[in-house]
Length: 194
Image (cartoon, rainbow, N blue to C red; front, side, top):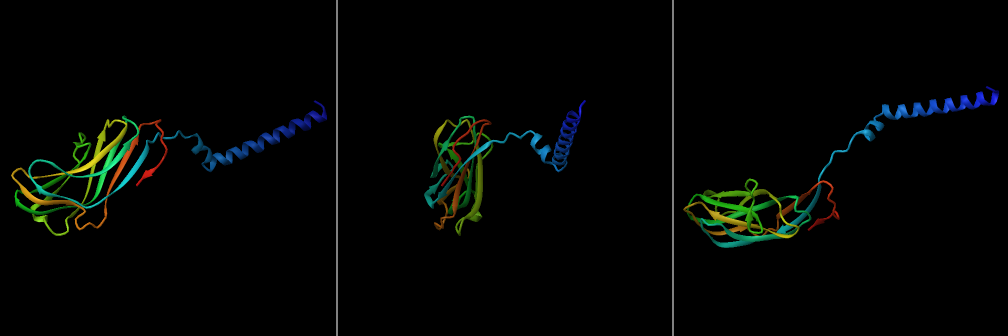
């Protein structure tokens, strides 16, 4: 090997050694390990938020009756799982019979088939300022498009009551949050609707 070849070979070796040291330093401080770690598949979540205004129903019986439509939300995929959460106050003015009332979240006037989306108010809690509650429910296989969330109410089996309400006193503090958990690979224009 001539002198020029030896110098070129040494320069290449030094460059490779420097490159190796740089890459080793990157790996030892954790940067390379993070880049090589597979990404966990997380669902995309579409969130819609609705202000719930005070609304009342004059009388309540043991049969469910619609108290109020809470909001119209959009579903992007029929394969999505949709979670509705109502945070606010429920109220019944007076019970003349029975042990209390049950408030239920529904979508398109249908109860959840995955558990319950309910809260109760006992006769001893009637009147006053109502009771703060958080009601959550899961709804599956909703067709793509617009759907209506609503609150329904009934008394206990032999009950009777007057004036069921959400947001008693009309404080404008109740809210409905709709989260659509989209299937892996589904994309949409990210937004929070209010």
